[in-house]
Image 1 (cartoon, each protein chain N blue to C red):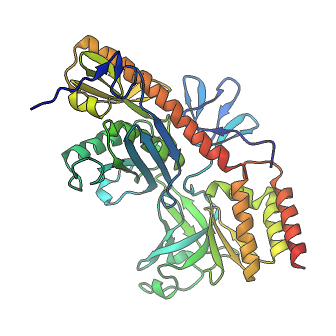
Image 2 (image 1 turned 120 degrees about the vertical axis):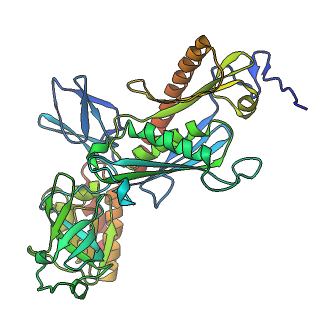
Image 3 (image 1 turned 90 degrees about the vertical axis):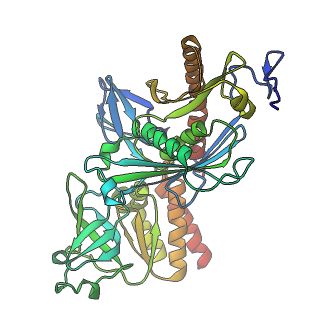
Length: 240
Length: 226
């Protein structure tokens, strides 16, 4: 039944990448007019839109924290984002991703400045091709900067994994399905602090360490693209 | 157009050392270094280093003049949207009218706009506003334009230079709220000119010598008319 796909050919991966190469990433800030901050991101075959609303009074009241703001990230996959239609609405997976994304973002935002408020981050996956949680978090970070929300750093995420006994950076779709492990990591690039770390599959300790190093290196590369996207939006906008 | 631009900083960008500068607004300190905490432009003010944000909501400050929109009328007070993270309170004691308990809707209702002053902001950011000051009243007629609150100082200009220019060349009545709402009333083409100019000011707020440029273009326009 199971068709074995060769994930490597003469040292290159299915899509011709090297083991430590990222997919193509395109980031654009400020794409939505009604949101206070927004971002459109393409990461290989992933297409993600993130929108930020707030800080605004947290509703319902019982979610308010009298001392600081709360971050309410909402990750949602469009029904048409995957090959088989996805049943719309929140499910176990998207609720988990919403939770870990909120927690990662809470670590960098200066929440004490907005007591009783909520910062709403909506992440919409329009097209999915492995690594959407990293793409979503990366897009959300740019949208937060675009919304003018005070933060200590711009968070960034990237995954590493293991396919055919090799540790590689940024798994593609086939690699994610056929591979043996996936390790998404989010960091604050200035301090190197880890904001999110999940693992799916099995890695030996040595493999894990190598994958983590690789993912963090990938994060720094993505971070540069993020910064460029923000700078180009605001510098070019002011040219007159 | 302009040669010089103000430098844009992003969150987490290193902007100075605590040895030479004091950390001002929009910054934070980590290990003796000063970093920006938001997207903005650097403003060196004597020995403080500040970051003025490019975007974001209005941060209420006491004695600011603002434009608010009534959200809700309660029995002895109103909730007013002032473009801040939280709605502001307007108590019936803080209005120039004699309001009976439960009759607040007779004076101000949902959707009405008012010019107001920030009376008090407490430590948990609860905001109170008042209508009891000179020239504060309910807005009747005219238009309200929304701008970025951080651009308000540019629209007003140094000692009100920009705003008096606008008033002089368009003959409109203008009130600029610190919270990023601008009220304009006057002739139709005057209003249009004000809106266009404010848009221009917003787009070019990073360049220097803006007041002169705006004056030039306004003068050119008024020549075309006459």
